[in-house]
Image (cartoon, rainbow, N blue to C red):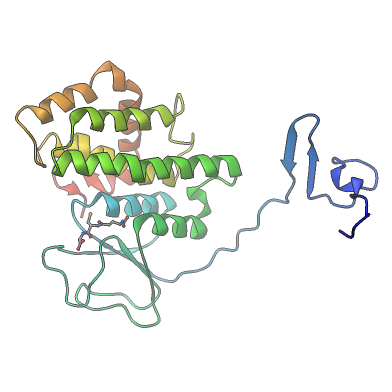
Length: 265
Ligand SMILES: N[C@@H](CCC(=O)N[C@@H](CS)C(=O)NCC(=O)O)C(=O)O
């Protein structure tokens, strides 16, 4: 805007105001309302070609991605990696997603024309771009989902690994569970409808509750698994238990998890 120009008041006109020049945005600061009026977003969905997920048994990070793929109704191939005996070419952690190229075999590196993506949360964001039903369009809900993911990935997983493998304190573990519980709405999933926010968190909660504590997988002092399980199943954690049960009841979970073999192969 050149010096001395007046701001274009028409920009502040609401919908239906005579002659407003931009139908995209209006703000009524006096009413404290800001609305973004965009036409419905036209998702330009890339076609990534064949999707191949490299997974490992007992990996909550991999489980994140598999849940999202199942919820998206995606077609994908899955290759199981033994982390103690990785194929020679495989320098990555799991999960690892290959997009494009021909069908792969465990011992064969992806072809040069295939694209690869690592880091479970990056893969989840990529899947949202390809399968928009994994996250609602509403910006505030998207922000809420990302905050939930951020808290799950930093605070919860940090407490989880410290508790299980570095003799972290029960109290710190339970505080992290409480913090996640406080982010949940009164009913439903992390942001109401199921989304990648749930995919990012539930595998860790499930591992803690239904796998590591029950089967004493971790480095624990005597009595710690029992004490922690009793607390998690007490009235204080009623909401998060219900949340876990509702996640476990989903088809995506039935297709990817069972308590005996841990992950459905
Ligand atoms: N930040 C990574 C962590 C993935 C990760 O640590 N994966 C473990 C299995 S749960 C792994 O592949 N470990 C084998 C290794 O480090 O070589 C993600 O979110 O994908």
